[in-house]
Image (cartoon, rainbow, N blue to C red; front, side, top):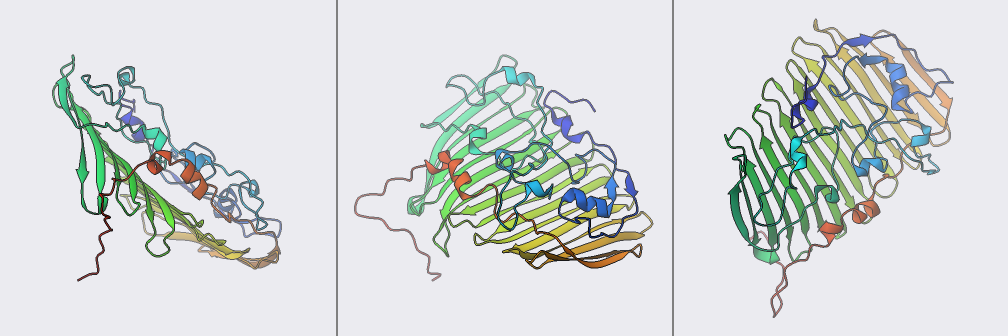
Length: 420
């Protein structure tokens, strides 16, 4: 499929998957089962021969946002990419993405927010899949310091507008915002983008963007990004949270995708990250969910669940989970598929790590294979996030620089709700 001038078609250049299954073997003492996502596939040996943008299957390399370039990963790539129980940290492979370069004539024009009396030109295009949560510097948010309401018509007949203002509320609530947008001369394409920053007297701060658009081919998209600082109501510890929602829909066929990403950090080392994804291309649909949780005291929980299906009844998936604390923990997972006739195949596996170089490995499949043995192996897992509190503080300078409204003379106290 050719890429149009907005680059939208690049997201839908999919090929239908072909399912192939080969026999798997039970692990021997020399096999390091399940210590890497790649090694896990050696055991499971179920693969989908398709474009890597179609299904949420494993990929060996790629690029992502800056958080992920610091090491965030959903795979056990190799021993070198993991923490030993002795906490020997090393670099991890980034989470794969499907970035592409836009080939847009609009890049030759003005930036989205230009000086007054010249219209903003949209560089807007559908968001890119699998790129996680961007840092604030990537958005280039530049809010106007004055109330503005202006509009105009460009030489090609397209129209534009730009406006900005402030909203005030209780407990020192303050929101400064800028909104801009435009339409083509015939109304077949349209874009809108809004920037804002918020604060109140409780210490809450928020920075955000929302953008949407559609083009003459009927393609449409929507994306929102938020970054906020607040104080946890139970622990009173400062917390920074980042979220991103992205979706795009193809106008000429039954194709589209949606992603929700979130990251949460607090000053004591508690960290939570995750995503939910969904996509569809005509008769094929796929889903992916994963999460990470670090309690700041050495306890780690990670999980992934991926599956896909077609309208003819074929289904396949892969999931795993791990829990560790101070070298003791467990991993378990399953790979499965269902044929159009309803026949189901699956292989389940598990590991118990006792913290003394003893690992109990077990598993079975619907083919009749099974294994249950104890081996001498070191335990590897990520004991702490590669991107944590210090990193997110360093990347959130614009959020932290937001200044709250000045309190009036005489003292004003936060509004308290006692549920009366």
